[in-house]
Image 1: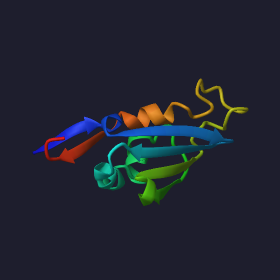
Image 2: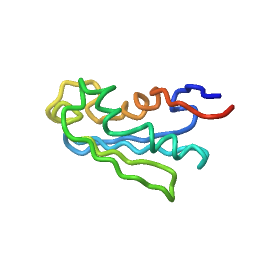
Image 3: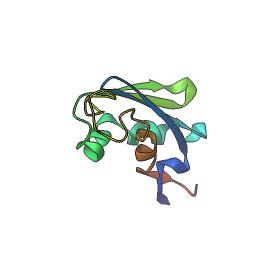
Length: 109
């Protein structure tokens, strides 16, 4: 049986910034869920869900030994801390936003 859950149910995340670039790292709690993360959380999915604020390229780095992914998102902070009027110029809310994405799990997790 397949079920849909918020990503936060199987993973945690950290995010930060450097200029107009935001960095987002996501790690699953249980290594069994790494493939779910790898297959369903892609640059294309982030662009589809957050395209209004993600205006540049998104590069994904896989961290299989750590059961995680790292995303580097250019032009993601409306100019960065010194240029933006955005309330989250540091990109700290990226982790909360991404952890709200729904992922599909197989089985009865």
